[in-house]
Length: 190
Image (tube, rainbow, N blue to C red; front, top):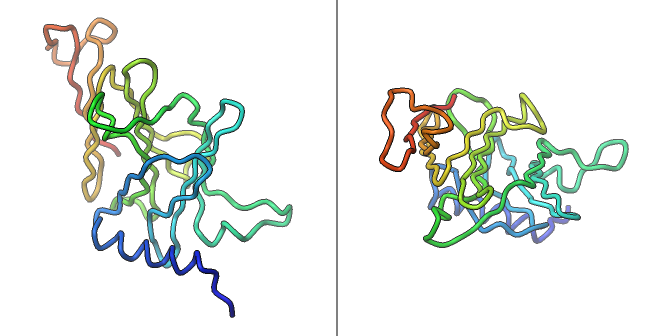
């Protein structure tokens, strides 16, 4: 049995990444058309890829074994295919760019991993999308947009989401607004 060199590289990368990144939520720079292995579950490596074609950006998630296998029509099986055209990803210290990225992770309430996408939309806003391929293979099951910032903290059984929202567009739940007219909102998912 011949083993492809990329299989060895993939297995090594996944093993080492889980030693140095134990929370299994690893962000890497977005490179269009490049598959990125990020999560190992039951011997399968979950891989994501962002494809860009004629202005449309698509996030595709598969398991590594599905990269070379195909169904009866000759097409590979995808766990998730989602349109993320509204997103752009930045890097660096400014505009909370360090939060941008695609993460495949697991929380204790779910048997399978979920996908977290944080990106910029519009001039300054930051958007969070959570995808659960078991529930919907194309649309996020949860999404929030911060007017200027958004942070996500990964816990064992949930995500804590903090973001700002214009107090003029949606009054703060506790009636508290900052001097600039923005509310700070905290939510937990799920």
